[in-house]
Every structure is written in structure tokens, then in C-alpha cells.
Image (cartoon, chains in turn blue, yellow):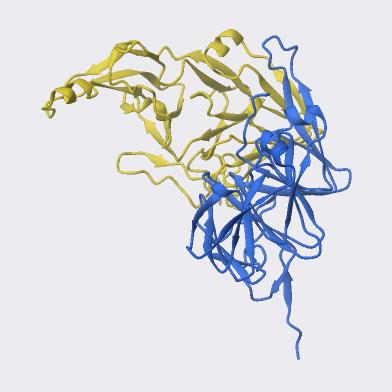
Amino acid sequence: MDPVRRIPCNWCQSQSLEDATSCRSCGAPLDVRDLISDSGWCEAPHLQNRTRIYFGNSTCQVEGQIVPVAEMSLAAGDAVFFEHHVLLWKDQTVPLTTKATPGGIKRQLAGMPFIVTIATGPGRIAFSRDATGELVVLPLHPGMELDVRGHAFLLASHHVRYSFVRVKGLCNILFGGQGMYMDRFVTTDRSGLLLLHGFGNVFQRVLKPGESIQVEPGGFLYKDASVTMDVEMLRLSSGFFGVPVMNLVRLTGPGRVGIQSMYHHHETE
Amino acid sequence: MTNPACPWCGAPGDGASLSCRACGAAWASPPNPTDSGWCEVPPIPDMARIEFGRSTCQVEGTFVPVADMRLEAGDGVYFAQQSLLWKEPAVAISRMPLRGAWRRLFAGLPLVMAQAHGPGHAAFSQDAPGEMIAVPLEHGRSLDVRPHAFLVASLAVHYDWFWTGLWFSTRWGGIYYPVGRIMDRFTAGTAPGLLVLHAAGNVFLRHLEDGEALLVKPAALLFKDSSVRMRLHVEQVGQAGLTSFWGSILAPRRCVWLRMTGPGRVAIQSAYQHLEDDGGAVSRSSPSTSQDV
């Protein structure tokens, strides 16, 4: 008997059946060429309308192109957590509960949510952010750690552990574009699903050990925990008018880095 | 047999690539004017490459496109400080001197522009949905661009600005500058150069014959050839259909337009910001033409 042949997904590295047209784990089209720029950035896969993504016993269907919606069909026993303002609609039967995250008042002071909402199956529930952009589907394999810009996460499956990392260094806090905290998503022995919303288009690049790239602070979206982050100031002039400095974040590998093309400027700039 | 020239910018085709090497327009999207003569400028295809000097610009993304520049040694670009998205550490950044700093500050324009010098990669984007427009400028050609639409230009393109002199005041006391106090002017010097703009929404282009005139909503103007003359046009709005007292008090009495007169190109964007007062209560204005009912 012939073994079942599988093909890898270039975006999330999951294996899919050879005749599949989209990846089961992240929804990336498998029948179109990956869009990789000369400089090595890979464009986040353009998810086809109504693509299904499988996690646990549940599925996520992505709908829409300009402001995409993630419609979850939760099986009994499965759950997702999210910031409450991204909820678009839900079945009456889907119960909502809340959960406090570590860091409580410190996160509140930093403008970050310290209470997340949990929706538990069975039932349907849908999420979106109110801005033009892309859904970035990141299946987290066991043992992964991902740092994400604050408020960029749309939802995560309940096996993903949600915490935060404090940005180190006053300069990084003031000029790094993240504030004091970044979200950290960790998987231990079970895989999970993480959905982000990037403003505009989203690009990912894998940095080799020691390789670095300088990014506009507001353009940063996510990185592997192994990637280090430092703010650098480029002095452009002697500064009579008070705008002598351009702040850039230097990201140094190894690991993945994700950026968004529509970004926020900070008052410090 | 020679390859056909790009119908958008006139650059010769190479017969191999799917998009024009000079402006990025897809060969499959020739101009298809509407009955009124406007042509929708087609979006630059994802990952299309545009050549300038010895360097290239690759356009990436669809909602908020990114101009990813591969700069050769000796080549460079300049840009408004806030439009840099990322760069390789090897790319050197320096300040570009600008004249009239106080006036630019007064007009709300970027005070500092920066230059990026190759070799290496640097990428630029605006933080708004829209389209990227690549305009190759031949020797001596110049283009006037509305403020904040400029993304990046090669060093072969000379930058300058000029006072628009277009304003109107209202009976409520406000003074408005419908296309800004200052417009950017880009001129190709001795060598051709590349100018990249970011437009909100879709972009439409029209060629005006010598003496041909057109009225355009001021906030929608994206760019024009410097040969196109521009002045305000105030149109009286008829009140004949209003029967109530409050209707006659509150209804707009005037409409402010830009009167564009050829020869040359005019481009507009389909998404634009509304002025706080679109001219309904104009009391005085810069020299303008008018149209009464």
C-alpha cells in the first residue's frame, strides 16, 4: 500500500495531504506561489475567503478580505480567549467567562488588558478588528514562545499560555513603540492556535543567528522570543527644531520577525 | 520586432516581464478611459520590480503597499522621516537640507527629510490604506504633488515646494487652504528619476488638452503636471428648491472647486478628507473664477 504523501506548508511548516489546496493548520494556499521579496520578506499568505483552519476538534473559517472576520466553530470542550472588544457576534449558547492574567494592575497602568474573555464551545463565535488589515494565522507548535505587539492579538486557543514580558531599558520603553509590555504566547506540551490582526499588509522574515534588521517601532508586529530587540537613535541634524532623531528598533536573530505596513507613530517621535 | 512601449509611461517594454520596468504598471492593464476621459490607474502588481538608476524598487502588499528599495552603491533615495518602515543596518541615513524650514513648519509639512544611501535595502510605506503610484520623471519634467502624498524619490529628482496661494475664508471666520498652503514640486534634473507617491483610495488620471478646463474637488487632487494651471472656482448653488426658512439659512450657498486648465496630466484620489467647511459659506477667497446660477 502506498504511504499517504504529504506536502509541507512554507508558512507554518505543518504537513498537509498532497491534494490539499490550503494548509489545515494555518489556511495558507498551497496551490499558489509564495510571495517572497528580493530582500527576503515573505508576505503573509492571502487567505482565500471561507478557508477552514483546524485546531483541536474545532475549526476557524476566515471570511472577508479588507477587514477579515475569524468565525470559530467551537467543539464541546474547546475554548478560545480574546480581548472583549474584538468580539463581532456569537451564538446565544456560547458561554463567556473572564480570566485575570498575571500582572494585574501593572498591565492596567500600562494600558494593556489584564482581563481576557474566554468563549467555550459548543457553538459559533466570530471576531474582527475595526481596521483594514490582514489576519495572521500562527499555529504554535509545542515549546514555542512568541512575543506580540500589544493589542495585536485577536484570539488564541485555550492550550496557549498568555503572559507578558516587560520591555527592558528605559530607552526601549520610551521609544520602542511597544510601551512597557509585550504579549507573550507560550505553548508547552500541546500545540495551539494564535490569530493576530496586522494593520495593512504583514510580512515575515527569518533572521539567522546574529543577523539584524532595523524596523520602524510602529511597524513591529511579532517576533520569536529568541530575537532580541533594542532601540537605536539615528541623529539626523543638530536639532534646532527639536526633531533631530529617528528611532528604529534593531531586531537581531535567530528567529522570525513579523512587521505590518500600516503603523502607529508615537508622540515621542 | 520591437516590443510595445508602456501605455502609461511610454517606457520601452522588454517583452519578458509582466509589468513595466519603469512604472510597475501591469502590461495586462492598458488605459481604459471612461466616457468622460478618466483612466483608473491600475494597482501595481504584488512583487513587481521597478528599475531606476542601477537600483530597483519592489512593490509589496495590496492594502498598504510597501516600496522595498534595493539600493546599489552610489544610489540613494530621499523620503519624509516617518515613511521609513525598515532598513538594513548597512544603509546610511542622513539629513536632507530643505529651504524655508519656518514656512514648512508653519504649513504643517515635514521639517526634516532624510536620505538613504546604498548599498542595501530600505523599505517605505504610509500608514493608510491606498495605492502606490510610481511616476518615472524624464529629464526636465516636473510634477506638483499635494502635501503628504509623497513617499520616496530617487536622488536624481530635485525637490522643491511652492506656495499655492489658494485660500478662502467663510462668514464664520475660518480661513481654509483647500490643497494646503504649500505643494511639493519634483523635477528630474540631468538624469531621469523615480518618484513614488501614496494615494488614498483609487487613483484616476486624465490628460487635459491645451486650454481645456476641468473642475475638481480640491481635497481629491493628487498631482498635476507643472504645466497645468490651477485656481479656485466658486460656484453659486441655486436655492430655488428651498421653501422653509431654516433650509434657506442652513443650505450651502457656494461650492468651491479647483479649476484645472491644461495642457498636462491631472490625477485625483477617490478617498479624501473633507474640509471642515467645504466652501458653503465662502465670504472671501484668493483670486478665483466664479459661476452664478
